Image 1: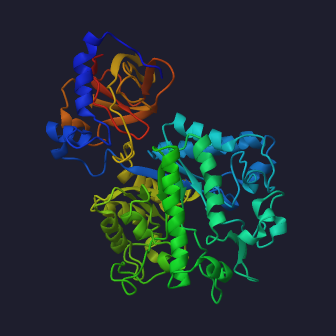
Image 2: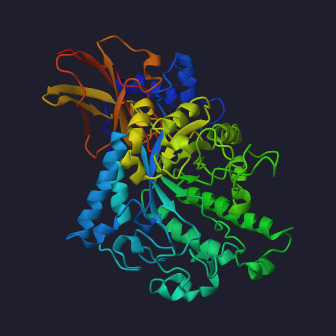
Image 3: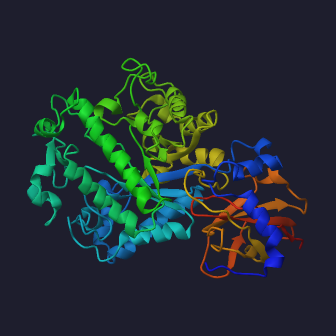
Length: 555
């Protein structure tokens, strides 16, 4: 949106107030910040409703590997495959909005392939059913644009090292797409497990050229597309198969000098991937977030006194992922441990792992979201706790006891929509009843935002239509308004600072459009009732301006 300028005399006081109220997120010592302003107005001491937090990351994973969520295999044979796949994706966005999510995490590089026209890797087989086949459109561009239209953050989910799946190319390089990089560099790949069910190909993480290549392939999407985040899951080195070691002995002998063990060397290789990827993302686009969703156990206390009171698989040893280190070194912006166990499970108790992870992120700038196992709800193969429709809601209630927990991500979209046992309805009603802004990341660069001015409101048959202008947008010291938050209060009384402390009065957010006049239709307004409306501006990181002056709807 282009800046709409007014005479300086009419805005001087407002401009000064906005500058003082919302300084850049990376402001120098002594500069007033948004937190300082909240404290000064009393908002920091406001009572809030834990069921309606103002900021909370809410998302679901939309998995493409083996067509778990999107696109479906059925779309391949639709009369119009592209239209069918677009419609399927719109359905997932409808679900996200209905549940008051504010982000989607979509898998766009499941097996060393791409959901965009990549110069480095072939088109994904999960778009057409054929490895390397051009789908005839740019899915990633569409995925991002449609998410942003609904003001959902888009986090691109990449798998760094997995090349194939058992029901695809398996361990056979000759079955990879024509022109696949591994066809030119077969020495880069390792089959694992060998001569066993589930065998597939992986890039060898210990080869420096491999690490550089996969980073370049993923960063192509960062450079060319308007991503909000880059997301890795738990697959680094493959999970161990009984009686087999990943065949990288020759690589260790070549590159492992100075390491006490192969395990230490492997962890170093993954450390390099994470640290370098974070640095490179920020060098390209400093605002793009980098997050990882590892296996939920770092180490058991029996193996390391710093570990959790658990007795399960350890990502430190199984995947050679030193996830605690990544947090403490602040190489990532957020972490989503997959705490896929019920409350009270002996070997891995949700109620013990959440406080352990809260303690890990404490004192760092890394945000903690919890990975939730919606796929276990109502599964007869799971423990009795998962047959209780309220189990997942209890997880989210427990999270409230730990202020370090900033949100949840649900696996996966299909299971969220399935609503088994009515569990999705229960936890959504008890925890996601209001919209929420994504948590702000104060270490990422930002500029202050000028507040909007509401210019009108019209009662219609389907609600109240609000109109406003962003008078100063991306001009001078001010940042760009990427979106807006709309607040509504009953009657005409002034709410004070505490009225904005949680989401009790937040009725929605909307993406900024190119025109000077912005709008929102409040479909929940009741005929004849009086309301006071406020609008705030949000930048792309959800940093928020001061509220607009109120606009009263009296009849």
